[in-house]
Image (cartoon, rainbow, N blue to C red; front, side):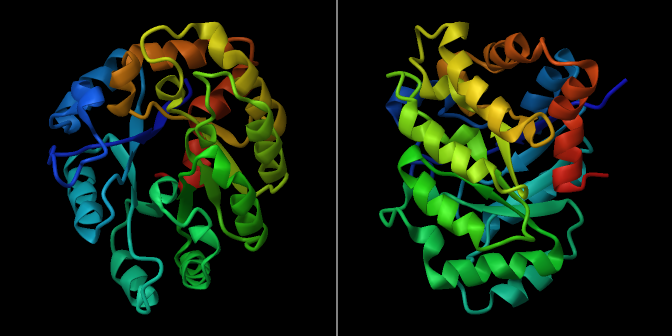
Length: 278
């Protein structure tokens, strides 16, 4: 019986100012989402654990997620936030290294005015300090940042990277060519993984069909292979375009043709290896 991990989800106590990215079009998620809301869903779909990922750019967010992980065994790991451009980043990582469930870090690069922020020398320095503590880095970008991201990952041979949400292609308008080219370049680097997550929110929220995702999934499965891909629900954000079951249906439909071993890797083993989960 293989272990199943949801490698990407979020918790928050909704704050309209801090969480201004959750606008009125996303009314379905303008409320609190906590472990007691997720646990029954994971149980229902036979998922054994999850990775809680930051949404707010603050160390308070990292501590909030770590506290939840401490008191909920099904939260197997946390991807937090620290200021990677800070002069004392080494000291901050030293402090965070006491928390065993902290597995890595993320910055909301997709929202930055400077689209090439990942190439900023201070940011690059911050990333280089992660390796000493064996921390991973989640890359959250839009397709227009794929070129910069390729330059970025080329710089680091030993760091473990994962692309969130297959880099958010414009599924709604069926734009695929530029995205596919960018993804293929990045996938050549063996230390970069990819999360098959968050796709329904890039499609037409109310009218998508399973077939809308096939061409995009073909690209990531052909380029990353089944040893560097992992499932993530992006719950509760997925609720704006359906919900957990709908996100799951897209991925289950596509992966049903994989071998038993490949499915075991995709649904759990890859996430366990990447994040070094206990």
